[in-house]
Length: 117
Length: 281
Image 1 (spheres, rainbow over the protein chains, first blue to last red):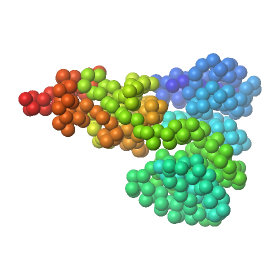
Image 2 (image 1 turned 90 degrees about the vertical axis):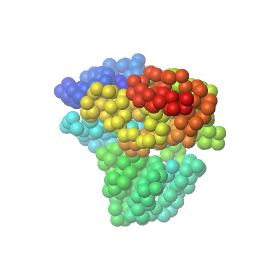
Image 3 (image 1 turned 30 degrees about the vertical axis):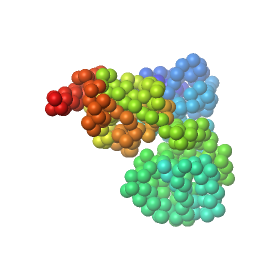
Image 4 (image 1 turned 90 degrees about the horizontal axis):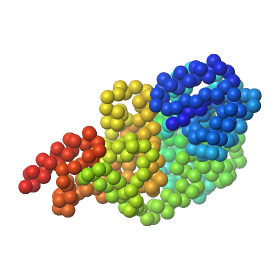
């Protein structure tokens, strides 16, 4: 499986890589702090799971979701953000998971479990 | 399979169950305006080992809220897919916390529900139509175990997305209908690895892939899948190994000492078959 992680916040990005690696040793983890580069990646590669912040300069989490779902209807998208404001719009965009920051290993593990079912 | 809907407003409930009955004519749709009755019904279904697949819940109800109701349903039936149907958008975050599969704003229409189904694997409109056609003409499933393991839907050999998905199916066939859990599967597919969280996730991925491959060929009903339980349905398949055990002469003659030769764990059954063959002579 290919797991894509996108966030302007480098610290969060690093943490996420570690947490995901800890529970998915056989999967490929790709991270971007620049959402426009992430969008390009989505257009040109297969992505199974996307962890993304919502509010980012360049391409927002919603834009990434739209492009990914267009390419792969079965892809699994998880928003990670600090406010519940986007939740209703996330449902409408067919986002699959939504976690509030600050994140931790456990929250990430739970989301990945649901991504598999 | 079963679909349940709960809404304390009877007109809204009827409207919803009508739509669901149209969309799922071969399945059972039941509506409840009382939360406790709905929970009791779900418990009964679990006891009868019937499959409760979908739950459509209103949120703001007299008595127990849809959110609390969802939690209780998940305790009874952890695998059920929950979709909220509500006039309020302020429970959106809570719905995500519960890992619901959909959140639909009233007024509900068939289009809105179809849109949610498009995103639930196996339930898009085309997949449901295919399944309905398939149900009237069930494909013959042939399993060959003498030599290498192979499975055929009609005349087509099944393609597996990962070799471990195929190995898992072979293991289920070898078990002849006895159920296995995730830990057991893990120990077969990854013989020396410790059963940690990572391995459990990988095992669940392989299980999903196998089910997807079966579904793509229209023969997912060969496997009985429940929470932490997987088994082959022996009635559904025509298998040389099972025919051998039933005394079928042609099957016995087709055995030349090789059983699922690509899997090391199959050697126990091979030894058993060799034994049986000696006894016959």
